[in-house]
Image 1 (tube, one colour):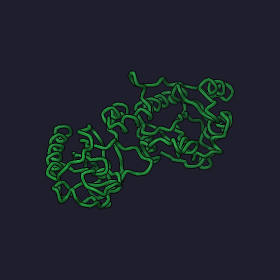
Image 2 (spheres, helix red, strand yellow):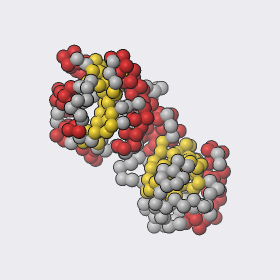
Image 3 (cartoon, helix red, strand yellow):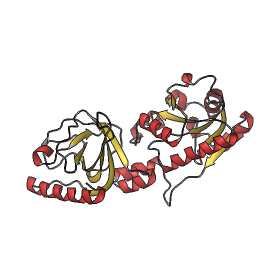
Image 4 (cartoon, helix red, strand yellow):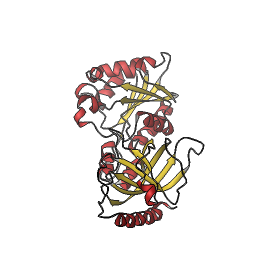
Length: 315
């Protein structure tokens, strides 16, 4: 998949395209439906390439930073998921207040017509764009008549609760990782480089791979989860292991404040993961975070966590 991080990088000889637009954070099932439909529309109108337009940073992070959402995925992860979903090219618009001030017509003229030569545009039915979100599907449809592109509105997916990035964030923040997985079509996961911690887990017989929670990134509510750890680099890249995962600040031990994801790979004490990039996927919540009065109580709870994790994810 070709990636363009500036409008100026788009080839002038791109040819006609089918364009889909969105933040695509988390690439949930609704996003996947839109991309599938974009591919179908591209085939129907006779163009070869589907182009996804997304934004970095998230527009709210620029316009109302105090209300910026916790991100479910980095821009690189979004692009990777878009490629797997069937997108041919991706344009990442560096979002700024200047771009936020564009009228809907400016967005159409500069992006859809001028740069991407859209023959078709495929968006969710609630899509809004342009200054103060003044543009909608009705405006896009009228613009298509004037600029020789068709508009396809995709109905919103989901049960009584429509699938959206906001919904997934709510599930993750509440620790409902099973609900998040239902909307995503896969377990919610976080990535990072394993750092050296205080090694208390190793001393207690449960060595953990510690990944700090990145600023601005979504992470499940504090608690213990069953899940899987996948190694992303090194000679065993791609190896996946069942794990019991703790998210939080270890309240049993005084003085610990940094929030982190700690994964104990079930029945393994031989893995050397320091400095390695890993992905931690959350399958089911086991319990909330508890401050224990003694190490003995903590050890008993950890042993039970491991049994329950094994029942949920194997190992």
